[in-house]
Each structure stands twice: as structure tokens, then as C-alpha cells.
Image 1 (cartoon, helix red, strand yellow):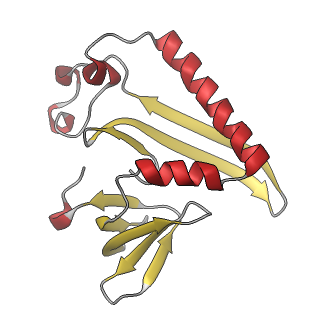
Image 2 (cartoon, rainbow, N blue to C red):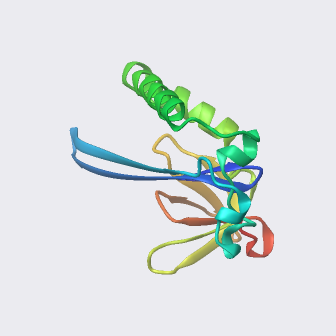
Length: 156
């Protein structure tokens, strides 16, 4: 789910946070934080999260080696970093869009100021911004925010 949740069967399995410091012509640093639900079972989650959270163990129906998982994750991050450095963002963006459940559906998005916009998620642009068509027909882009998918504010 745009921009930072990884879902399995509409339940959150991983959250991603990034922090960047940069200038117009360079990135000084980028911090990537990942929270992955690896070997949790349904009853390990607080009751209020059981309907919206899952783990890799639940999905695969077997215990997962964290060492193998982190090795594969780091390999994949390096693989996509190389694509980005050598070819730019377009190939990654295309794959991202093909896997996104946040596109071509009704959404609402709220920001830190608690402003809420509702509309139809149409696209993710070349900068990673979510493009929403609002009820008045206008397009608005969002670089960050809390997205709720579906009608009647059903969170998935």
C-alpha cells in the first residue's frame, strides 16, 4: 500500500520508513527502516491488530529463518539499487505499479495536519507521488500521507 506498507492478503506484513537528507544535486544520506512481521502467529498480535496484520510465517505456513530472510532482503535491495543507479527509476516504478493495490481504486489520504482528501487513485508519478483524482475532477499529487483504501474508509 502506497507508500510504505507491504501487504499479504490485504493484511500488513511489513512497514517501511525512510529519512533522507540532501541538496539540489546530491543525497547526503538515506536511512531505511524496515519492520517485518517474521515469525509471529495470529495470537501474537494485539487483538485490535489481528484483522489487519499478518506475518511471513502465517503466509508461508512455516517458520522463517531470519538470517536467510535478511540475506535475501539485502540482496534484493542491492539489486534494485543497481537498476536505479544504472537505468533510473522507470523500471522500478513500472514494477511497483504492477504490484500496487493502491491504484485504480477509491482512496482517502490524510496528512500530518489531519486534512483529508478523497478520490480515485490514478497513478504514481516518476517522483513516487500518488496521483488522486478528486471529486471535482482535479488531480492532486501526494508525496506522503496516510492512505485508506476502499469505500467508507475501510482500511486494508
